[in-house]
Length: 451
Ligand code: ADP
Image 1 (cartoon, protein in one colour):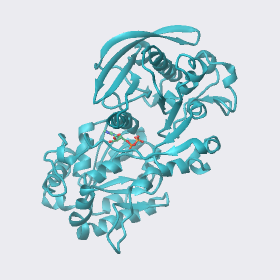
Image 2 (cartoon, rainbow, N blue to C red; image 1 turned 60 degrees about the vertical axis):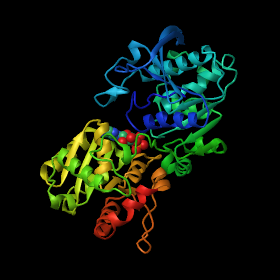
Image 3 (cartoon, rainbow, N blue to C red; image 1 turned 180 degrees about the vertical axis):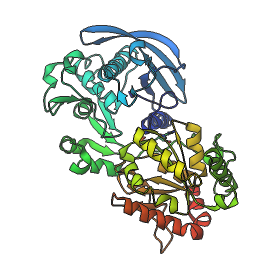
Image 4 (cartoon, helix red, strand yellow; image 1 turned 90 degrees about the vertical axis):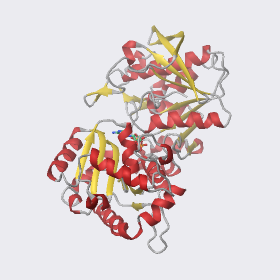
């Protein structure tokens, strides 16, 4: 597998969780998996191995290789100080690094050179997202012989990120101009590395069955719906899973007390801890009020424009809100201002904080994901595991994983709404808070935790 991130070494989103958990799950089924990611600044793990020579754009550079084995999975780190010894993974101050095509082309080629020289006989190469989109292209163009025609699988974790760059990159990366073709990398007079992954792979997967269907429509296809429809026979949606070794309230080291369906006191302790750590009131009255949690990249995709429209309504609800997020400054500003105006009810922390993410999942009563689109989404699944009732827009993987509660029977695992509007979100929030008193602890918390 080749990817730009894998937990615990480098993580900006769900991709890293999946690239950690999926190989381990495959290893448990008896497969051997090597995962190749960049050796970013700060990664100390791994024993040095023989370096590989990487041809790129008429030049040849050396990639250092480090390897570490854990839980039946070997992780290979591709190092190059110029490309990867930087402050961030993708860019700084809201801008991508301008040489990202080159950085990730280097990763892709180095991964293949490593594979060809490793002495292993691979059955498949699995590339994730646009950063690894050149893996199937390079494998076919330059390395078919060395890799004995090993077939490629490409996974789209989020179609919104398409790796679109100026066509001049083709020559700079040493790729032939023949790829500037509508059946290859060409995308509206530019090139797309995501398209390379889609077109040159034997199979394409994405992260939920619903999203696999949605991305073949103009509404969710982001200009790729035609390309994906042309490959629909080879496109399959496989729902992500979560790693219960890392996300399990019965043995989560970040929680103040462990809990499960038969021991819910620990959930109350986590709630208190979250309220206190966010500086919200934590007296008995406040602890009885439902706590709504959010952990998210602060980007349009996640529905923050809907929440911004509800700045007057949210604080009027009988609930407390905590947000942990990083991303666009305008959304940070919004949450900072909302929290300043309503310090008793709203609190936000900005930045990346793994421990706090676990505590929010443990301590919140309701988890909010009003996404505009969502390939799979992991947090709603963590929520289900932690007895935290998800409230989501019924799109993509959210639709596949959260069953709307039926008030007549009480069956269901959370609250869903269809229309992407602040009104629909508000109505659903009110509905959820309305049944809080009657059903909460007795009903879903226990059933979600038990399943
Ligand atoms: P996406 O990949 O689109 O960001 P997912 O729900 O698939 O969304 O995965 C997000 C992952 O990143 C989850 O593991 C979530 O807990 C984590 N995450 C997101 N933002 C933060 C943050 N600010 N601090 C800690 N973890 C975060």
